[in-house]
Length: 67
Image (cartoon, rainbow, N blue to C red; front, side):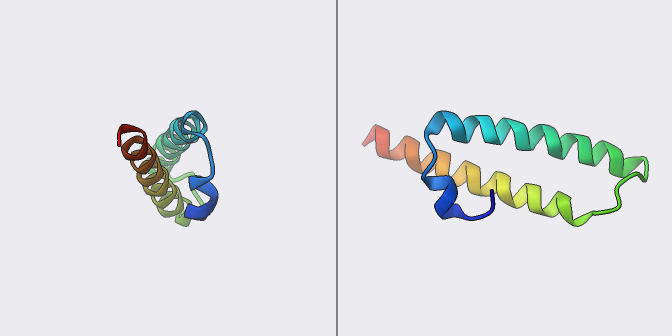
């Protein structure tokens, strides 16, 4: 996932699943970074940004449903 447009087209359940998956990946990368095993440190930033996009889409869909 990279663009907000792609993410906003997903169903709320899919967004939640992707968010949980990304959080797990981020946790694993953080742990590996602490032990010096991460070569591609830019992946941390990418995952954080993807999580932010997912959270934004999730809250937008929740607001749309509530309205």
